[in-house]
Image (cartoon, rainbow, N blue to C red; front, side):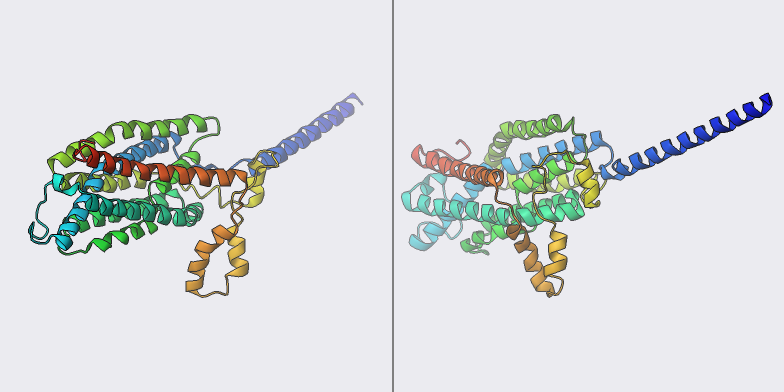
Length: 360
Protein backbone atom coordinates (compact mmCIF):
# COMPACT_ATOMS: atom_id res chain seq x y z
CA UNK A 1 0.00 0.00 0.00
CA UNK A 2 2.82 2.36 0.80
CA UNK A 3 4.50 1.51 -2.46
CA UNK A 4 1.31 2.33 -4.34
CA UNK A 5 0.98 5.75 -2.70
CA UNK A 6 4.57 6.58 -3.37
CA UNK A 7 4.27 5.61 -7.03
CA UNK A 8 1.10 7.66 -7.36
CA UNK A 9 2.80 10.65 -5.76
CA UNK A 10 5.78 10.32 -8.08
CA UNK A 11 3.45 10.16 -11.09
CA UNK A 12 1.65 13.32 -9.99
CA UNK A 13 4.96 15.10 -9.47
CA UNK A 14 6.14 14.10 -12.91
CA UNK A 15 2.86 15.34 -14.45
CA UNK A 16 3.23 18.68 -12.67
CA UNK A 17 6.81 18.99 -13.87
CA UNK A 18 5.81 18.22 -17.46
CA UNK A 19 2.95 20.71 -17.28
CA UNK A 20 5.23 23.39 -15.86
CA UNK A 21 7.80 22.71 -18.57
CA UNK A 22 5.15 23.00 -21.28
CA UNK A 23 3.89 26.22 -19.63
CA UNK A 24 7.35 27.77 -19.62
CA UNK A 25 7.88 26.57 -23.17
CA UNK A 26 4.72 28.38 -24.25
CA UNK A 27 5.81 31.51 -22.40
CA UNK A 28 9.23 31.38 -24.05
CA UNK A 29 7.57 30.86 -27.42
CA UNK A 30 5.38 33.90 -26.89
CA UNK A 31 8.38 35.90 -25.71
CA UNK A 32 10.31 34.88 -28.81
CA UNK A 33 7.49 36.08 -31.03
CA UNK A 34 7.39 39.42 -29.22
CA UNK A 35 11.18 39.86 -29.28
CA UNK A 36 12.46 41.81 -32.28
CA UNK A 37 14.28 39.76 -34.84
CA UNK A 38 18.06 40.02 -34.52
CA UNK A 39 18.29 40.97 -38.19
CA UNK A 40 16.37 44.16 -37.48
CA UNK A 41 19.56 45.86 -36.38
CA UNK A 42 22.22 46.83 -38.81
CA UNK A 43 24.91 44.59 -37.41
CA UNK A 44 27.68 45.82 -35.19
CA UNK A 45 26.46 49.06 -33.58
CA UNK A 46 29.93 50.39 -32.81
CA UNK A 47 31.21 49.90 -36.37
CA UNK A 48 28.20 51.61 -37.93
CA UNK A 49 28.42 54.44 -35.43
CA UNK A 50 32.01 55.25 -36.32
CA UNK A 51 31.39 54.74 -40.02
CA UNK A 52 28.59 57.31 -39.84
CA UNK A 53 30.97 59.73 -38.12
CA UNK A 54 33.58 59.22 -40.84
CA UNK A 55 31.01 59.77 -43.58
CA UNK A 56 29.72 62.91 -41.87
CA UNK A 57 33.26 64.26 -41.52
CA UNK A 58 34.14 63.69 -45.17
CA UNK A 59 30.86 65.08 -46.54
CA UNK A 60 30.92 68.21 -44.38
CA UNK A 61 34.58 68.80 -45.18
CA UNK A 62 33.95 68.49 -48.91
CA UNK A 63 30.86 70.71 -49.01
CA UNK A 64 31.90 73.41 -46.52
CA UNK A 65 35.33 73.92 -48.06
CA UNK A 66 33.68 74.85 -51.38
CA UNK A 67 31.76 77.86 -50.04
CA UNK A 68 34.37 80.53 -50.87
CA UNK A 69 35.65 78.86 -54.08
CA UNK A 70 32.09 78.69 -55.42
CA UNK A 71 31.63 82.40 -54.75
CA UNK A 72 34.87 83.17 -56.60
CA UNK A 73 33.85 80.96 -59.50
CA UNK A 74 30.46 82.66 -59.88
CA UNK A 75 32.01 86.12 -59.63
CA UNK A 76 34.50 85.27 -62.36
CA UNK A 77 31.65 84.02 -64.53
CA UNK A 78 29.65 87.22 -64.01
CA UNK A 79 32.74 89.34 -64.67
CA UNK A 80 33.61 87.57 -67.91
CA UNK A 81 30.02 87.76 -69.08
CA UNK A 82 29.84 91.49 -68.39
CA UNK A 83 33.05 92.40 -70.24
CA UNK A 84 32.18 90.03 -73.07
CA UNK A 85 28.81 91.76 -73.61
CA UNK A 86 29.35 95.41 -72.76
CA UNK A 87 33.12 96.01 -73.09
CA UNK A 88 34.32 93.37 -75.53
CA UNK A 89 37.52 95.15 -76.50
CA UNK A 90 38.95 95.66 -73.03
CA UNK A 91 40.00 92.04 -72.41
CA UNK A 92 40.49 89.07 -74.64
CA UNK A 93 37.53 86.67 -74.61
CA UNK A 94 37.63 84.49 -71.48
CA UNK A 95 41.12 85.62 -70.51
CA UNK A 96 42.22 86.33 -66.95
CA UNK A 97 40.58 89.43 -65.46
CA UNK A 98 41.96 90.93 -62.22
CA UNK A 99 39.54 90.53 -59.35
CA UNK A 100 39.67 94.25 -58.59
CA UNK A 101 38.06 94.89 -61.99
CA UNK A 102 35.06 92.77 -61.01
CA UNK A 103 33.84 94.91 -58.08
CA UNK A 104 31.75 97.39 -60.04
CA UNK A 105 28.03 97.69 -59.44
CA UNK A 106 26.65 96.01 -62.60
CA UNK A 107 28.99 93.05 -62.24
CA UNK A 108 28.10 92.59 -58.57
CA UNK A 109 24.39 92.81 -59.39
CA UNK A 110 24.74 90.05 -61.96
CA UNK A 111 26.85 88.12 -59.47
CA UNK A 112 24.08 88.41 -56.87
CA UNK A 113 21.56 87.11 -59.39
CA UNK A 114 23.72 84.05 -60.04
CA UNK A 115 23.97 83.40 -56.30
CA UNK A 116 20.21 83.69 -55.91
CA UNK A 117 19.35 81.38 -58.78
CA UNK A 118 21.84 78.65 -57.86
CA UNK A 119 21.07 78.75 -54.12
CA UNK A 120 17.28 78.91 -54.38
CA UNK A 121 17.25 76.33 -57.15
CA UNK A 122 19.33 73.90 -55.12
CA UNK A 123 17.13 74.36 -52.04
CA UNK A 124 13.91 73.85 -54.01
CA UNK A 125 15.15 70.71 -55.73
CA UNK A 126 16.37 69.28 -52.43
CA UNK A 127 13.04 70.04 -50.76
CA UNK A 128 11.10 68.33 -53.56
CA UNK A 129 13.08 65.08 -53.36
CA UNK A 130 13.37 64.93 -49.56
CA UNK A 131 10.20 62.89 -48.96
CA UNK A 132 10.51 60.55 -51.98
CA UNK A 133 14.07 59.73 -50.95
CA UNK A 134 12.83 59.11 -47.41
CA UNK A 135 10.31 56.59 -48.73
CA UNK A 136 13.06 54.97 -50.80
CA UNK A 137 15.18 54.70 -47.65
CA UNK A 138 12.30 53.01 -45.81
CA UNK A 139 11.99 50.43 -48.58
CA UNK A 140 15.58 49.89 -49.71
CA UNK A 141 17.66 51.20 -46.84
CA UNK A 142 19.63 54.33 -46.07
CA UNK A 143 22.79 53.00 -47.70
CA UNK A 144 21.28 53.21 -51.18
CA UNK A 145 20.06 56.78 -50.64
CA UNK A 146 23.48 57.78 -49.29
CA UNK A 147 25.16 56.42 -52.41
CA UNK A 148 22.69 58.32 -54.60
CA UNK A 149 23.38 61.44 -52.54
CA UNK A 150 27.13 61.10 -53.07
CA UNK A 151 26.56 60.60 -56.81
CA UNK A 152 24.42 63.74 -57.03
CA UNK A 153 27.05 65.75 -55.11
CA UNK A 154 29.82 64.60 -57.46
CA UNK A 155 27.75 65.51 -60.53
CA UNK A 156 26.63 68.84 -59.06
CA UNK A 157 30.05 70.16 -58.08
CA UNK A 158 31.78 68.74 -61.15
CA UNK A 159 29.31 70.39 -63.52
CA UNK A 160 29.57 73.66 -61.59
CA UNK A 161 33.35 73.65 -61.95
CA UNK A 162 33.36 72.59 -65.60
CA UNK A 163 30.93 75.36 -66.58
CA UNK A 164 32.98 77.93 -64.66
CA UNK A 165 36.35 76.96 -66.07
CA UNK A 166 35.18 76.38 -69.65
CA UNK A 167 32.96 79.35 -70.35
CA UNK A 168 34.15 79.27 -73.93
CA UNK A 169 32.20 76.01 -74.35
CA UNK A 170 29.28 76.44 -71.95
CA UNK A 171 27.10 79.57 -71.80
CA UNK A 172 26.45 81.14 -68.45
CA UNK A 173 22.79 80.05 -68.39
CA UNK A 174 24.02 76.49 -67.85
CA UNK A 175 24.38 77.45 -64.18
CA UNK A 176 20.59 77.58 -64.00
CA UNK A 177 20.22 73.85 -64.75
CA UNK A 178 23.03 72.64 -62.49
CA UNK A 179 20.74 72.30 -59.39
CA UNK A 180 18.74 69.60 -61.20
CA UNK A 181 21.61 67.18 -60.57
CA UNK A 182 20.52 67.22 -56.93
CA UNK A 183 17.28 65.51 -57.92
CA UNK A 184 19.22 62.23 -58.10
CA UNK A 185 20.02 62.00 -54.41
CA UNK A 186 19.38 65.36 -52.76
CA UNK A 187 21.83 67.66 -51.05
CA UNK A 188 23.49 67.87 -47.63
CA UNK A 189 20.21 67.75 -45.69
CA UNK A 190 19.33 64.42 -47.28
CA UNK A 191 22.71 62.99 -46.35
CA UNK A 192 22.29 64.21 -42.77
CA UNK A 193 18.84 62.64 -42.55
CA UNK A 194 20.11 59.32 -43.91
CA UNK A 195 23.07 59.25 -41.54
CA UNK A 196 20.80 59.83 -38.56
CA UNK A 197 18.45 57.13 -39.87
CA UNK A 198 21.25 54.60 -40.24
CA UNK A 199 22.59 55.51 -36.82
CA UNK A 200 19.14 55.22 -35.26
CA UNK A 201 18.74 51.68 -36.63
CA UNK A 202 22.17 50.66 -35.34
CA UNK A 203 21.99 51.61 -31.66
CA UNK A 204 19.74 51.06 -28.70
CA UNK A 205 17.26 53.57 -27.38
CA UNK A 206 19.45 54.40 -24.37
CA UNK A 207 22.42 55.32 -26.60
CA UNK A 208 20.47 57.32 -29.17
CA UNK A 209 20.89 60.82 -27.72
CA UNK A 210 24.61 60.35 -27.12
CA UNK A 211 25.18 58.99 -30.62
CA UNK A 212 23.22 61.81 -32.24
CA UNK A 213 25.17 64.38 -30.24
CA UNK A 214 28.43 62.76 -31.32
CA UNK A 215 27.41 62.96 -34.98
CA UNK A 216 26.45 66.63 -34.66
CA UNK A 217 29.72 67.36 -32.85
CA UNK A 218 31.64 65.88 -35.77
CA UNK A 219 29.74 68.11 -38.21
CA UNK A 220 30.25 71.32 -36.22
CA UNK A 221 33.92 70.57 -35.55
CA UNK A 222 34.54 70.01 -39.25
CA UNK A 223 32.81 73.30 -40.09
CA UNK A 224 35.36 75.18 -37.97
CA UNK A 225 38.32 74.48 -40.24
CA UNK A 226 36.70 73.45 -43.55
CA UNK A 227 36.24 77.05 -44.72
CA UNK A 228 39.89 77.84 -43.94
CA UNK A 229 41.01 74.83 -45.94
CA UNK A 230 38.93 75.95 -48.91
CA UNK A 231 40.30 79.50 -48.78
CA UNK A 232 43.87 78.22 -48.54
CA UNK A 233 43.45 75.89 -51.49
CA UNK A 234 41.85 78.53 -53.70
CA UNK A 235 44.75 80.91 -53.05
CA UNK A 236 46.97 78.28 -54.70
CA UNK A 237 44.58 77.62 -57.57
CA UNK A 238 40.83 77.98 -57.95
CA UNK A 239 40.46 74.51 -59.44
CA UNK A 240 42.29 72.83 -56.54
CA UNK A 241 39.47 72.96 -53.94
CA UNK A 242 36.99 71.55 -56.47
CA UNK A 243 39.30 68.67 -57.32
CA UNK A 244 39.91 67.90 -53.64
CA UNK A 245 36.23 68.14 -52.70
CA UNK A 246 35.00 65.93 -55.54
CA UNK A 247 37.67 63.41 -54.54
CA UNK A 248 36.42 63.54 -50.94
CA UNK A 249 32.86 62.90 -52.11
CA UNK A 250 34.05 59.88 -54.06
CA UNK A 251 36.04 58.60 -51.07
CA UNK A 252 32.91 58.90 -48.88
CA UNK A 253 31.34 56.08 -50.88
CA UNK A 254 33.85 53.60 -49.39
CA UNK A 255 32.66 53.81 -45.75
CA UNK A 256 29.09 54.02 -47.06
CA UNK A 257 29.50 50.64 -48.75
CA UNK A 258 30.95 49.25 -45.51
CA UNK A 259 27.76 50.00 -43.56
CA UNK A 260 26.41 46.64 -42.44
CA UNK A 261 22.92 45.25 -42.22
CA UNK A 262 19.61 46.30 -43.70
CA UNK A 263 18.00 49.30 -42.00
CA UNK A 264 14.75 48.60 -43.81
CA UNK A 265 14.28 45.32 -41.93
CA UNK A 266 12.52 46.87 -38.95
CA UNK A 267 10.26 48.96 -41.16
CA UNK A 268 9.26 46.04 -43.40
CA UNK A 269 8.05 43.86 -40.54
CA UNK A 270 4.30 43.45 -39.98
CA UNK A 271 2.56 46.45 -38.49
CA UNK A 272 1.45 44.39 -35.45
CA UNK A 273 5.05 43.64 -34.51
CA UNK A 274 5.94 47.32 -34.80
CA UNK A 275 3.01 48.36 -32.63
CA UNK A 276 3.97 45.76 -30.00
CA UNK A 277 7.41 47.36 -29.75
CA UNK A 278 6.12 50.92 -29.78
CA UNK A 279 5.46 52.73 -26.49
CA UNK A 280 1.92 52.94 -25.19
CA UNK A 281 1.53 56.52 -26.26
CA UNK A 282 -1.50 57.87 -28.13
CA UNK A 283 0.80 60.31 -29.94
CA UNK A 284 2.96 57.50 -31.31
CA UNK A 285 2.05 57.12 -34.98
CA UNK A 286 3.92 56.91 -38.28
CA UNK A 287 4.83 60.20 -39.90
CA UNK A 288 3.44 59.11 -43.26
CA UNK A 289 0.61 56.78 -44.15
CA UNK A 290 1.32 53.33 -45.49
CA UNK A 291 2.29 54.23 -49.03
CA UNK A 292 2.19 50.60 -50.10
CA UNK A 293 -1.52 50.39 -49.27
CA UNK A 294 -2.21 53.61 -51.17
CA UNK A 295 -0.17 52.41 -54.11
CA UNK A 296 -1.92 49.02 -54.28
CA UNK A 297 -5.35 50.62 -54.12
CA UNK A 298 -5.02 53.72 -56.27
CA UNK A 299 -2.09 53.31 -58.64
CA UNK A 300 -1.93 49.61 -59.46
CA UNK A 301 -3.80 50.19 -62.74
CA UNK A 302 -1.69 53.20 -63.77
CA UNK A 303 0.99 53.19 -66.41
CA UNK A 304 4.69 53.29 -65.61
CA UNK A 305 4.90 57.05 -66.19
CA UNK A 306 1.91 57.75 -63.96
CA UNK A 307 3.32 55.50 -61.26
CA UNK A 308 6.55 57.48 -61.34
CA UNK A 309 4.57 60.71 -60.97
CA UNK A 310 2.49 59.17 -58.18
CA UNK A 311 5.69 58.31 -56.30
CA UNK A 312 6.33 62.05 -55.88
CA UNK A 313 2.70 63.03 -55.31
CA UNK A 314 1.74 60.44 -52.68
CA UNK A 315 4.07 61.73 -49.91
CA UNK A 316 2.61 65.22 -50.18
CA UNK A 317 -1.03 64.06 -50.27
CA UNK A 318 -0.56 61.85 -47.19
CA UNK A 319 1.61 64.34 -45.31
CA UNK A 320 0.14 65.15 -41.85
CA UNK A 321 0.50 68.90 -41.43
CA UNK A 322 0.42 68.99 -37.65
CA UNK A 323 2.11 71.55 -35.46
CA UNK A 324 5.43 69.73 -35.22
CA UNK A 325 5.75 69.24 -38.96
CA UNK A 326 4.93 72.87 -39.69
CA UNK A 327 7.59 73.98 -37.20
CA UNK A 328 10.15 71.66 -38.80
CA UNK A 329 9.38 73.05 -42.25
CA UNK A 330 9.68 76.59 -40.89
CA UNK A 331 13.06 75.82 -39.35
CA UNK A 332 14.19 74.25 -42.63
CA UNK A 333 13.21 77.41 -44.51
CA UNK A 334 14.96 79.71 -42.04
CA UNK A 335 18.18 77.68 -42.15
CA UNK A 336 18.17 77.66 -45.95
CA UNK A 337 17.59 81.43 -46.02
CA UNK A 338 20.38 82.01 -43.49
CA UNK A 339 22.88 79.98 -45.51
CA UNK A 340 21.93 81.93 -48.62
CA UNK A 341 22.37 85.26 -46.80
CA UNK A 342 25.91 84.27 -45.87
CA UNK A 343 26.81 84.23 -49.55
CA UNK A 344 25.38 87.71 -50.05
CA UNK A 345 27.34 88.90 -47.00
CA UNK A 346 30.58 87.56 -48.47
CA UNK A 347 29.86 89.31 -51.78
CA UNK A 348 29.05 92.59 -50.01
CA UNK A 349 32.21 92.57 -47.89
CA UNK A 350 34.30 91.76 -50.95
CA UNK A 351 32.81 94.71 -52.85
CA UNK A 352 32.74 97.14 -49.91
CA UNK A 353 36.36 96.75 -48.82
CA UNK A 354 37.85 95.60 -52.16
CA UNK A 355 38.92 92.31 -50.59
CA UNK A 356 39.49 89.07 -52.38
CA UNK A 357 36.84 86.48 -51.63
CA UNK A 358 39.54 84.23 -50.19
CA UNK A 359 40.34 86.96 -47.63
CA UNK A 360 36.68 87.30 -46.63
